[in-house]
Length: 509
Image (cartoon, rainbow, N blue to C red):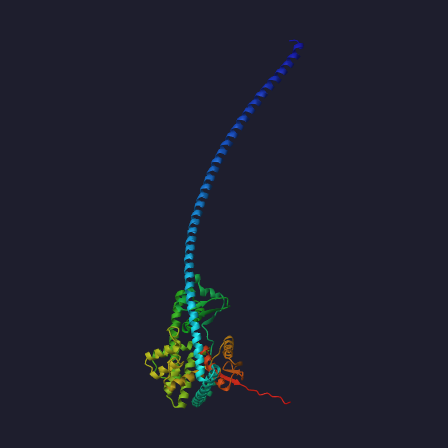
């Protein structure tokens, strides 16, 4: 082939390749467009199906919401119907009550009219009767009232003067009898040891670590101790100490001694706790019997029943206002014996009554009733003679005192409790008692001022002389003393002194 055909051939070949490449590219582009179109149609179809599903789900939700709304509307409609029925019933009931009230008002109006007429008639009759009485008596109403009051006052004053003189005579006789009791002045100066009246005991510990051992694992040791001893054990923030609480002083003492032994021994577990508590309880019971026998020996009252001596020994662990009750019983017996000897009364009966007068305090937390009644019942049960039983039952005037020995024991009881150093009370209780004394005195009409003296053993009442005369002052002292007896509790006695001072003032001109 010549060179002249070679160049056009190449050009033609190139042109054909370009055309073929273009055609191939167009075909490939058309295939891509068709694929994309198919993909788009597929996506559109999926979207349409998803939209249909969402639409169906939305319809279901709408149906559920509509059903719920209809049910709520139906429930609300039912409640409204019930409320409407209830309101209708109430309206009917109110209408019925209103009718009844209107009828009652009408009835009351009629009765009021009748009463008004009757009142007018009574007033008219009263006026006529009063006028007739004034005409017959020849005095007006005010004159008759003044005359009647004058006569009543004169007769009342005469009666009061006679009664006061009689009381003064009896008081002189009583004063002579009580004067013989002054022989107990020397005994009153005897002060015995005393402890505070408490319902708890504090047990010292060597260290705070011991508290954990007392409590034990899961509290088993402390629970065993409380059940065995019958007390409450208080473990608080108090350093190196635990508190034992119980209303029964004997059980509290048993628990205190048992705890001391357990702490000293160091072996603290349930079995050992029960063993130690039983041992201490037996020892305390023996000590109680010994103390009862010793008290009867010191008081000079032999021949008592063993059960009575046992109950008497329990008083060693009982206190009142800080005074040991067993020591108080022995002291009362001794005082009663001395006074009975001076007055010529039965010394043995007085001593026995003084020793046993507070026997019921050993059981007042176990038996219903006052300690006087409890002690009298027990003494009667164990063969104590009737005179001594009456002393026990009557030393707080719950029954009538039948013998002079009963009065002697009451006086000895007051001396033992009221002597200096016998009893003590807290500052708060003392302030309350003094304030109560002054409030009682100030509550009476005509009282100007009042002062509590001698630690609350005396109250002096200053009255206004223009309101209270001499006779009324005597009555006022008696009324104040009576109100103090009824409204207060106190050891011994409280003296009431009413002071009326008259001052005459004039001026020289």
